Length: 268
Image (cartoon, rainbow, N blue to C red; front, top):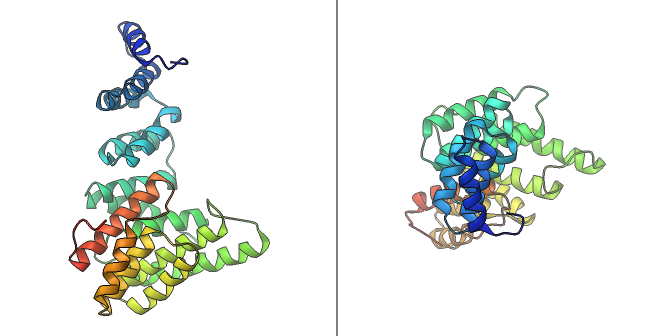
């Protein structure tokens, strides 16, 4: 494997595995198979390795599967990670994966767990995770005004930290503000306030924007009757700047929600 001789690596791993299962060797053979162009077989080895695996396989596998849209596989890895030690990030990823996989029950369960973490001393990361998962579905009985107030508090806190450089969300303060403002725009949309949503979205666009905020701008314009502008913004929603696989997955869920509202299909 060190020499990237994938066919030979695959052969040797198969010989060793004949003596019994070993998650590290299964993961290694999966890597060799994938590198040799046998992606589905490699995925199968990774899935068989998951029950005994640790974070060396589980997070890379979950991220890879999310990047390729295999959210049912990603959920298998995330559930194993949860057994090793639950966290807000795992709940966030499971919430996103459930939304992408069309599992509303799973999405609600993870959102509920994330919201329970939002005590008076909740971190900005916890707030960001919970709010990002909340806006992925327009669920009934969701307290949008309450979530909006928590988002406003997070933005205020982030602005205060920016002044002293004590804290930054991943990617820097401006990216953190950009993301929270995009989330705020969607919270306003879910609450039925298009003008306020557009105001927050434009602020996010001014900081760099992204696909998820352009989808919000499209919905806001549509609700205010500017249909041509809404369609132009929806086209931009397909070309986001989101870096991580989970952020890109969020963008796609929200872009599809915008497409549905505008009555558009497969806008690219």
